[in-house]
Structure formats: structure tokens, C-alpha cells
Amino acid sequence: MAYKLINARPSPFGRKVEISMREKSIEYEVQYDVPWGENTCTPQYSPLEQLPILITEKGENVYDSGHIINWLETYHPSPALLPEDRDARIAVQTRRLLGERLMEIAQSLMFELFRPQPSTAWVDRQTRKVRGGLDELEKLYGEYTVQTEIGVDLGDLAVGTTLLGLEFGLESGLAPEAPVLHWRESYPTLDEAVSRLELRPSFAATKPQMMDVNLGATVS
Image (cartoon, rainbow, N blue to C red):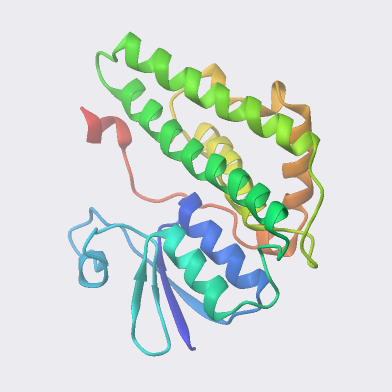
């Protein structure tokens, strides 16, 4: 196998990379790791000690999901997940940015809510930011036109894995209960867009799985 992906089972960041590789028909094998575990291998391959990590056929270690996605688009440009048209490319990158930042902000909110005494001001601010991101994505997907030959782009990957990751977190107990995380109820256009993505084989084959993690104990 030419590529190895070191990943975490429930990670939306790693899932995004896997979907990209499947859409590009890149063969790879997956090694699951727990970065905070006693026997973790993650520090051997990433100075940031974070997953996912892609080990290339030349033994190069490529880390950080955003950088891995860019690396794949550079070295495996076909089929493209970014359109060639300049304006369309910027539109895709805007949705990608919102999807990626939304997950980071939502994680910040989750960690705060797991604390014994969450900061009300911090929770309110992160909640506003999550809602603002969802509002903007609802608007953008209302104007959305598929720009790539395969009918999916990097914006879809970021948004889909983030929103489905929030759902998985709530269903599995990895995420604390927070009304703003129940996005399908308030955003019908996003609901329709993500439901369409879920039908793609690349999404269906990479559903998140549980791992040994207790976020409540971690933050406390």
C-alpha cells in the first residue's frame, strides 16, 4: 500500500482526509491511534502530536488535515476537488473555511461546557459564533451550484464532516448537550445538502466510530 493514514476513529478532521482520498481513488491503509494514550505513535510522525497524519510512498510525514488536503490536491489533482474558475474557487474556499473553523469553535464550546463551572460569557460567545457560521452556510448553500466534475468539492468535505461530526458527538455522548449543535432542526438547506453528501460512497464508508476518550475527565 502506497499511503498510510494515521487517524482517530471519531475525528471529523481525519474523515475529511479519507473522503478526499476516496473521491480521488487513492489507495491507502488506516492505522488508528489514540494521541494521549500511553502507547501512542503520533509523536513519532508529527511535531504537533495531532492526528491525522499521512505517510507518503516516499516516507514523508504530512500532518494537519488542512495541509494534507492541500497536499493531495497538489499531487493528485484529478479528479479536482477545487474548480478552476477563480470566483468559483474562492466560493468553495469560503465554505471550506467556515466548515473548518466551525468545528474548531464548536470544540471550544464543548470543552467549556464540560468544565465543572463553565464561563457563561465564554459559552455565549462561542454559541454566537457557531450560530453565525451556520447562518452563513445556510445562506451560501441556498446559492450553491456544484462546480466540480464529480459533484463534490472541498467546501462540501469540510462542511459535511463538521456537521456530521457534531451529530455523532451528541449521539455518542462525546459532545455535551447544547441546543445550537442541533443544526438540522433550524437549517433545512444545510440538512438537504448534508443528506445528499451522506449518500456518496466516500461518506458512507468513513462514518465515525467510538474511541476511548472521556472529555469530561480531561477538562476537569
